[in-house]
Structure formats: C-alpha cells, structure tokens
Image 1 (cartoon, rainbow, N blue to C red):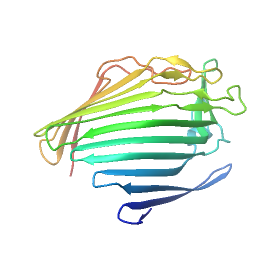
Image 2: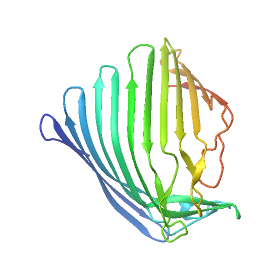
Image 3: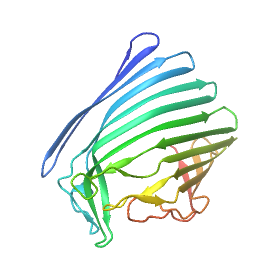
Image 4: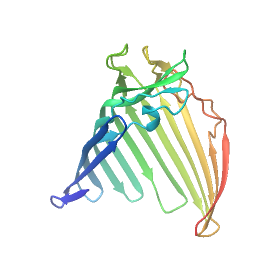
Length: 268
C-alpha cells in the first residue's frame, strides 16, 4: 500500500494484491488494485472517493464434493467485481457523521441454489449489482454512554445468464437500519446491538422474487473485568426471541430462540 500526499489537503492511497492458486483442474492468477482520494476540507470535514477491484476464489466445498447435500461445480469461476464509493465524513469532538453513495458490480458472483425436490444445493456464477446510499452517526464520549446508528437504502439485483432467470431480479432487502448502545461503569461494560432489514424479497432459482417479512436481529453482551488479565462475558443472542427467516432463497433458516453463552478469558 502506498500513501502519497499531493498537498496539505489532498492525498492518494494506492493498494495492490496478487492472488495465485493451483488446483487439479486449472490455475488461477489475478492482480487487483484499489485507490482512494482524500480531500481535507477543514479540521473536521473531509471528502473521499474510493475505487477497488475485488477477487474471491471459490471454496473447496463449492468446487469439490464435501457432503451429500451439495453438488460441486469444478468449473466455477473466481468472483471478480468493481466497487465504487464517494462520501463525506465529519469528526466533531465525540461526534462522527458519514454519508456515502456506493455502487458494486460483480460479473461472476458465486451463489448457491437450493433444489427443494431433490434437496440439494448447486453452485453457479451469477451477475450481481447494487447501488445505494449510506448514512451513519457515532457518539463515543469518554463517559458512561456511547451509541451509534445507521441507515442504508439500496437496490441489490441479480441475474443468471443463460438460465430461466436471464433478467435482473430483486434480491435481499432495500432498507437496513442498525444501531447500538454501550454503557460503561467501573469494571462493567454492557452493549446492545440491533439490525433491521426491511423491504425484503425471497429470490427463488427459477421464478421471480416475491416479498417476505422484515427481520430484526438483536444481541446483548455483559462484560466484567475484575483485573487486567481476566474477563467474564455473558452473550445473549436474539434478545427479543423473534422467529425470523434470515434466508433469501427458496430455503428457510429461522433464527434460534434466545440463547446464552457465559465465558471466561484469562490473558497471560
């Protein structure tokens, strides 16, 4: 990664990555780059523009058989895409704001499809794109309370070339709201986090997407540090005990009921 200052207000960050993999069928080689331009408006406000190439190899399970419910695809292509983002940031004391526009386009998106009749998964390369706006706010003082919130409005689309779904179809959800609260007092720290995804659709492999219910994921953590080496943690998932389907294909996976995990960590 290279950081270059053009002047007192402008700088450029350039990154590069080479990926090389060999296998029984073929070899893969990819050189990808990323770049970001930063413009400092004043001590609190800045603008940025980011362009990055992405590259993800298929997993071993997707290319070669690792179970009875998945049909491997040794001809899967690596997932390549372009990601663009332009935005504004402000840091004012304990307050941070961010607003950004983003666009992603992946031509060989690796996706899984579930066949209810034969009860098997298959893997293919689809085309995927998403455009949206992201707003976020973070308040992190030195006192007891801290909190954050965010709103994303997007339009994710997918299509499978050469199949019955060779057209752009809705996927996932359009509206995501996130938030969290942290409370600290002495050796105790508590935080609560929530993520709400609305305007969702189910996207079957062979038919048009159709609306489905929003989901709300919640978690809570209690942390006690009696000394600098020890931590006692209680994690609670699905605090509201909701029964939400978090899948977006023709298969269903519901969140488990409220569950707890108590752990102890000691640092040597």
